[in-house]
Amino acid sequence: MIYNQTLNDRTQKKILGSLKITEILISKVATKLSSTQKTCDIYAMTDLGIAHNVTRMRGGFFTGAVYKWEQSDIPFIPIDSTVNVCGTALYKIDSDMNVIEFKKRCEKALADTSKYDWNFMNGNHFISLCYLENNLIGLEKGYYMLVHASACEYKEQLYPTIGNWYYHDIKTEVSDNYRYLRYIEGGKAEKFYQIVKMLESFNKERNYSFCKKVLENKIGKEIVNVAHYGMPSINEVLIGVQKTNGLATILTSPGKNIFIVSKKYKDKMGYIPHGFGLELPEESDLIYHKDFIEIGGKRFFSKSIMIGKDAINRHGFHETEDNLRKYIMKIEQINELKVCVELKQVCSFSANGFQIWWNI
Picture 1 (cartoon, rainbow, N blue to C red):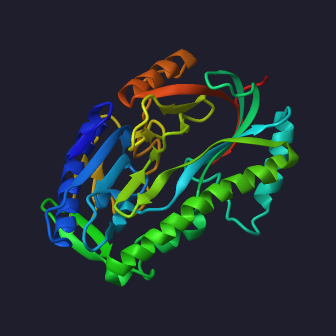
Picture 2: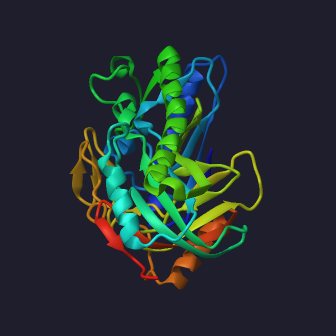
Picture 3: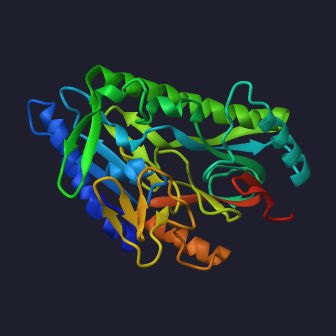
């Protein structure tokens, strides 16, 4: 079953049709590997959108959704979900921090790659110095450090690339219209899941280690350290969704205010969108072919989607702070969330380099 918690915009309506086939294929494989009929649930969130990764979309997976199936007698994992672990972490800074000092500290930390391969300046990842004025949960006014990154050190072990440890064990369930589901089963699936579980703690420690390296004795309380990409269980994949009944981040766009939210009502699912997501350019379609996906008349075999060219950030409004808050309120209502904190970005490192957003 598909649970539609989207904005129901043009892009999402097209993707929901594709997800229906994904649901059918996952259910079919789960049933094939069991003695009874099995089903699949897909939770499509407000940030459901185009994935950066073409392999993922060709396999029927999109960002901003949860894919959860009834556990089969023989475990399996759909490998085109291109699982890795990614998340955000937020720490209080225990004293004032100006832009120049923060920049120098970050540059020094980024230069040390002896233990981790820092990727804060790749894709949509970032490091941000933020300022908190008011909030609803009693956090101290002042400066905070927010990071967003993935455990890239193990990425190639999990992605379905030629030559990796499970590539020759991939099986394929085929549907009409060039759709398929590729998966691994049994012991290989269990090994895959164990790597993902290891990466959850690894990425949390990785984010903490970087913030500690930057802030040193100024690092304060951890406010958030949560994944929005990974596998909470062997029969559940989250892509751009946070699963928590604690605090989580809603990422916006470079330089804009970032929001910390929680579920309004505690539930066992605790699914929270992680941002706004990517939508198709105006009048573009997403069409499956035998060897590629066509988006806006362009053919994509395996290369990544380029933001701003092949897909655009979902905004739909001029981003004044007032309009941004109204948009967040819409997300808040659909997903039954409560906005607890609004952070103003002071400066950040990202794929666009170092930028100053706000002079205090």
